[in-house]
Length: 383
Image 1 (cartoon, helix red, strand yellow):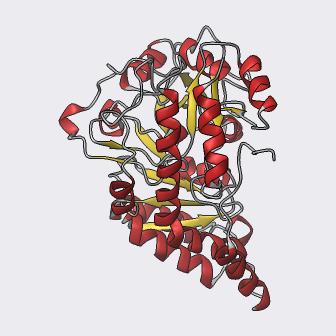
Image 2 (cartoon, rainbow, N blue to C red):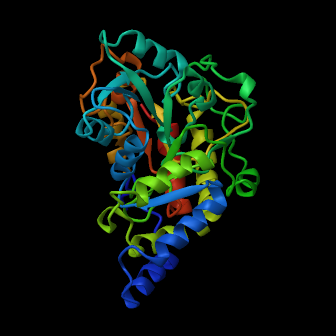
């Protein structure tokens, strides 16, 4: 039987929650959206949040809340989602594309500074949208020291955390090619289960937690936009209920919120299952020549959002080999700025190399043990 590259983690509890919302005729924005915000607050500790219809809507309002003026520039990674480009342009802002360092899929201080140094004369760079790509963490503490406004996108990194001291910020020393192990990525199931509801400190002015199909948590579509402190929360409150309040058409529907509430509650079980599967994949990858991304932080505990490999051979050959085994793999960055051809290889050579060579293997809680074993065997025998 064919193993798909991705399957949403929708189980009976999620289905029951959605059905209850439908039976009660409460599918628009309302009580369940408020319950979702309260549930998320218990895990993330934010001061205030808005439940919105999509990550694109959340980014739109986040940039608007920063008070940016038309023509000002926003730094984004070349491996950021494609919708970033459209939202930034629609607001009359300029995207400034930054590369990623060798061995890690997130922007660093060095790559951001390099992008700014190459900007057009007269470009006023005011903000950064910091995407936590594939669940990895950028050095947000160091990046905020650049003096720019920062929006963090934790859609793929919810559940990843680090115990790294802020004094270690800014190290880009991780090199592509290091093999995965206990020293770099945590796959201890008991440890993962114990910390599964914990999160890491956020440093941006605002943060976005996407709830789309491919995000770490899903509501079938939607996002939370939130602020961690009172001052920034006040800005969001004014945006939501000011002279031009956010209408219901932009707000998350209760039918989606009902699903997301259950996703939060089931997250400890789901992240534990992800860790169990990833442990087998990691062991199999040790015998191959393809590379893993390396976290820049010490004490890094990965949420196992995905299992990416940076290939040393052609992607088509590996995909064809996987299909023969009835296993579907995906290009990790097909829907990124680099993958869609928005950025140029000369601008962001590392990101473009990763966009061509990085693939994702099936890793989701619904994967059965026998299926996970088949994928592990595939990883260990890749051409």
